[in-house]
Image (cartoon, helix red, strand yellow):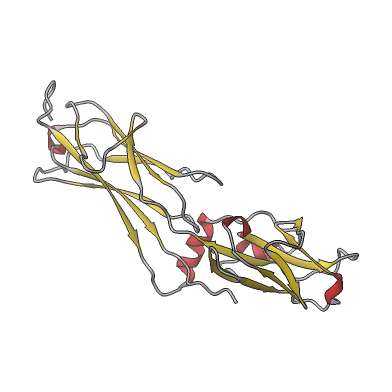
Length: 238
């Protein structure tokens, strides 16, 4: 980098990867950690560590949730994340099942059947995971979204560079990682990227910030990459 000119540039771009691996416990636990269902209405705290959803469906699909406790069908009510569900529109009953048509993201979470008049008679909560692919990520500097067609960023030598990676959507939530790929220069002594855990609100985009505390000549033509990885479950809704 050269002070006062734009010949020294830092190449910045984003990369979105989608993988569909075989299901294994470590992956499922990781996916569950990024996807935090609301509190349960029962006292079964073992479900808080549940790694595998009971039902996995795509948006606009149909799913049938089965009540696993012996209750007269006419006495069954259903709760979604602890809130009583009103039947009609997209929700209907058939015997001991709850049928949901045109599934939406708002249906994601825990569903539970119980007796209408006896709150102590209830079934095991069922975790319904509604899939959504993340949108294409983008980078931002000082609140300005970068044009993905021109991601050469001129930076003055010895100045700091802070970059934000933003990705909208995704259920389960994707993971974000930063990589600083060197150019032809030896970067062993150059300041590396500093970044923390991504900010993952319940609603809204995920954000992750990376910073080079001091840009030096060895960073010339280096590449900063924000890697977004989303590994969806296979749909299994009945």
